[in-house]
Image 1 (tube, rainbow, N blue to C red):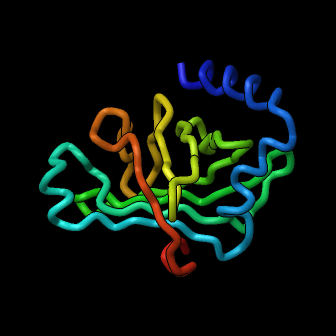
Image 2: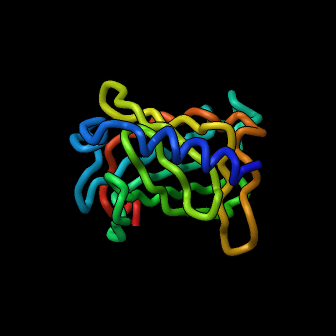
Length: 151
């Protein structure tokens, strides 16, 4: 099922005009660019079904030919486990390496909105995170952060 969704999205994305990539350029298009969010105890207490405690997204040193930008996505769950993956983006749609899912990026005031599209599950040192769509982890507001946060 995931491969079918990826294939369909790849066909749609490949048909986008080249200028559509500019949506990410002013936000996160060069080395050192980083966006992140750490949720405080009050937020997590008011969202008991949210599993993500912190999330970061940054420009990747690895740039894949055929994509406008390659990004590193990572997050830490409440249990302290870290997960990360490489995202290949065209326009506002990013596909995670290894059929790990998709997310959209949109500018929002002083940051960005990262929205999970149908499925997103990353690998960590002790296995997989589980699909974020199965919890209260579907939309994240992330903000500019120090580059070290995304390394």
